[in-house]
Image (cartoon, rainbow, N blue to C red):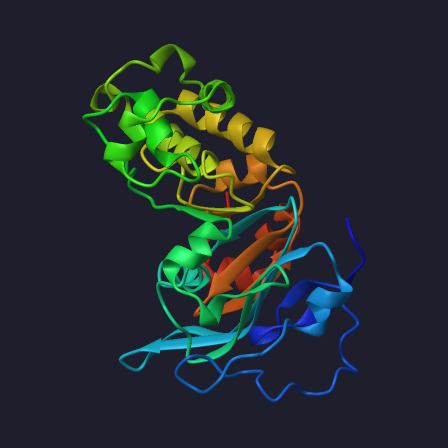
Amino acid sequence: MSSARIVRSARDSLVLRPDIEDEDEPEDPHLGLGSRGGRPRARPPKAMRRQDRILLFLEKISVSFDGFKALNDLTLYIRQGELRCVIGPNGAGKTTIMDIITGKTRPDSGSAWFTRDLNLLENDEVAIAQAGIGRKFQKPSVFENLTVFQNLELALAGSKSVWRTFRARLEAGEIEFIDEILGRIALRDERGRQTGLLSHGQKQWLEIGMILAQRPKLLLLDEPVAGMAPAEIDRTVELLRDLEGAHSIMVVEHDMEFVRAIARETVTVLHQGAVLAEGSMDFVQKHPAVIEAYLGEALC
């Protein structure tokens, strides 16, 4: 694990941050200006230029909806190949973070970069997806009338349309790539099956496979094991462990047993739109402020 420093966050909780050594950087005139507050940063922050492994950089992000502050001065860094778990009570801001990253929501203020080349606040959802960010929503979004293989075929990076996809003949490398994905998501034996006949867990895996077909650098997974049977949850743990390192992954989840099973390094706890605590699972589950945020009950 890279060097780190402990800083204070909201409500004086301890937060683990990458040692970016950026305190001496002159204040950027664009810092803290989102699409509603002015022009965002014209260049990536110095932290990203100094630290090659930072893939996603969110700094001082705030956003309000009808007077409700969904995110409050939130800062979050995700490294290349990292699997980051984000937890927190309902209304903590977890989904809003994903909306900011994917361009669905514009913040009132803050900076958001994906790699050193893409300012997330200056690009739309399509451009952000094409840059290598794939998002899986809680409810599976698959084509139930098509086969498993056809779903993955449609999702291949570079596919233009349903009609063109099914008229074109796949190259050998594309077929091999789809077969590799089918093996990873444990659906190789179901390749010709109609997707609507799959179990809930299998549909969840297929959607993850469809994201993988787009060759993403960052996967955003919203409650990937919601509604799964225990055996399906175990298989999902294996899948994410297999993907860790090859992709950066951000998982939003309420199932603490699942989080404990996949969280090898950092867990981020959100509360009232801010980072409440950040560190190992053992660290955050014993943190007094985290326990209080979960209505006085210790994390499982």
